[in-house]
Image 1 (cartoon, rainbow, N blue to C red):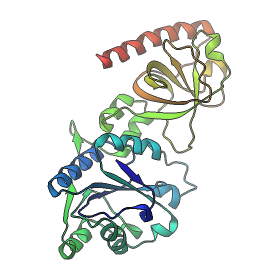
Image 2 (cartoon, one colour):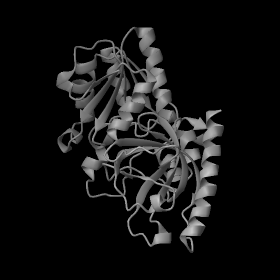
Image 3 (cartoon, rainbow, N blue to C red):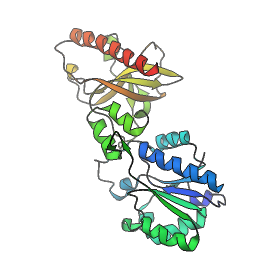
Image 4 (cartoon, helix red, strand yellow):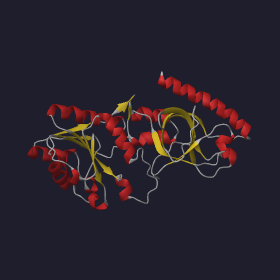
Length: 311
């Protein structure tokens, strides 16, 4: 998969099978669109092309809106997209100026001029161009004169539940990472760097790596304790806590992971954790001994969850 970060850097492309969207989370519905463009590209002997935007359009159009929480950073999105066999990902820099581009100009100057499409595939609710005036009907109008096929992918469902980014966000906000993973088609993950904490975990016999994210817009699941996969030099199991450490009257929200069978110093290193299941909600204990007793139970539960998933 080749990633291009400007239209000027693109080589000459012909016969492309193209899809367009933000693809935040690269969820089950997105995967169906990708699967379809790959099928068509194979039949038409052309490259499969996914066009997406960076930053996320809402971050540009509503920069003061702190309520927007993304399922994936741009690096996480690219990492996920690489798993699905695309030929080309085009990252269009999204600016206010770009947001004013009329839908017809987007089709003519971006899609047709740069990709010479043989087919364009979009999701059932996709709109594009200034004021979101571009849609399936406008693409079909152009398809007749420029000789490309147009296909709309219907809403995807899992167990009769429609898959959408908003449903996934709701599940994560409730701590239901297991359901979120089902809708995503992969485990929800966060990435960051290991920073020094106040060593409370070490004093309790459960040393933790404190994770600092490099974005304010990443959605963090609800406070609680989770069984997780931990990626460093290799894959480890672990249990992760999100919250304010109420037993110790904590003020700041932290993300800290106790990595099983691990003793290395990893300050400053990049770390990725995948959420497998929530063990319990955040709780306040009367003393540290009671907390340690609960952490021992949490560890057993986390190890059982990880073992069950790996078997």
